[in-house]
Amino acid sequence: MSVEQVTVPDIGGAEDAEVIELLVAVGDKVELDQGLIVLESDKASMEIPSTAAGTIVEVLVAEGDQLAEGSPVVKVEVTGQAVAEDDVPPIQEIDQQEAQPALKDVVKPVAEAPAIPKRESFEPQAEVEPSPPATTAASIESDTADIYAGPAARRIAREFGVPLGQVEGTGPQGRILKEDLQQFVQKSLSGGVATTGGGAGIPAVPEIDFGKFGEIEVTQRSKVDKLTANNMHRSWLNVPHVTQIDEADITDMEAFRKGLKVEAEKRGTRITPLPFLLKACAVALRDNPRLNSSLARGGEDLVYKKYIHIGMAVDTPAGLVVPVIRDVDRKTIWELAAEVIELASRARNRKLSPGDLQGGCFTVSSLGNIGGNGFTPIVNTPEVGILGVSKAAIKPVWNGADFAPRTLLPVALSYDHRAVNGGDGGRFLTQLVSLLSDIRQLSL
Ligand code: CAO
Image (cartoon, protein in one colour):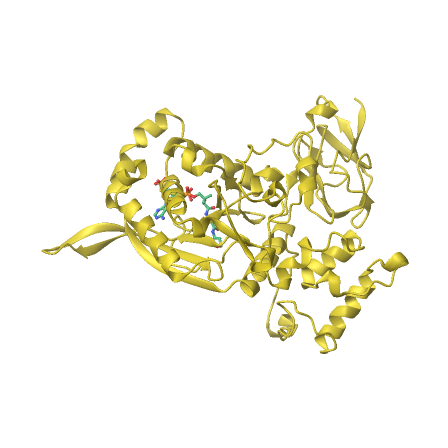
């Protein structure tokens, strides 16, 4: 038996990625590809997979260590075949929406996202670096490339919504230190800093010792959970939301879908209402292009996307992730059904690559399997629209002569009212409901 040293693979040139989580300990058995540690650079978080199967005999890093490509991570007493460097499995990209261009090169060999059709009036860079909305909380990360600050300082800035451009760096050559941020936050809280940031001026929620009132258990939140929280907060503070609500009569669609069950089994797949919803959204996005746009240049421009990539919210044990299905308008219902299953499974097993999480134009969040008759989803900015789908139910519907039992699907469209007007939103949702009520129209 030999002992293999696992090192950090190509992580896109990051020199000081911080170990934020140890996933294994000495004595643990690990499989090939199993996550060993979670690294966080100033651009992304990523799980470093094992390149050997066996038993961990030494952990060579600790939380807080700064690593780069080639840094030793663990020693494994090998029971299986070690893999060649070229076979290094994809690193699970954890950050959503925060992936930057360099991340495309982070992983070897991450499956490349399919090529995105050329846009007419927009730089390709926007594909991986979404243009945030005008207000500052969202601009914090994208506008800070020229600012001299390390990953730890950037992380603190991100977590506290601090606009780095407004912080005075006291480190060598004006580098912004953690202490500078702490001071900035303290000053902000005491009213000494006039920020233009979305979060400034919001009274802090006091910390409470809940243990005083009964038994409690405190757990540390996962990275994905915290990132989702940040994204939600950023959208909530920046985006004026309107939510429009309707019900689609999917009686005929459900009859058709259930009739496909045998065919689906033959194909080794299954079809839920979701592929139909995705397809109907693609048609409605094509016909209502405002919903397929993003704000850019601080709200001066509106970017119309000529492609239709739709994100699908997936509930995973680690938190909410939104992998993106590309070119939904060009795919068949069978293809979409297969992709929904495949992406949801990879999301739950932390096997998504950075490209899987980028480039979305619109999001569908389906709580249909869970229940409820409506909810108001939060826009996944810089997208401008999101569809929340609740549980279908059979209800009596007046047909002019009688009440007939019909299957009704509650849908709610939230949109960014800076980019989408009520008319656009209303037309989109009305068309969507009409498409779902008569899915023959999807083929037109
Ligand atoms: N009404 C009634 N039943 C529904 C339904 C709906 N709207 N949507 C799905 N179902 C049924 C499916 O048909 C399936 O039953 P059958 O096997 O009998 O057909 C069952 O519920 C299970 O569906 P599913 O959840 O496994 O699959 P899906 O394609 O509907 O959804 C996925 C896949 C990944 C989107 C989903 O599993 C998920 O993670 N949803 C959570 C998303 C979330 O957390 N959103 C909140 C984000 S905050 O805005």
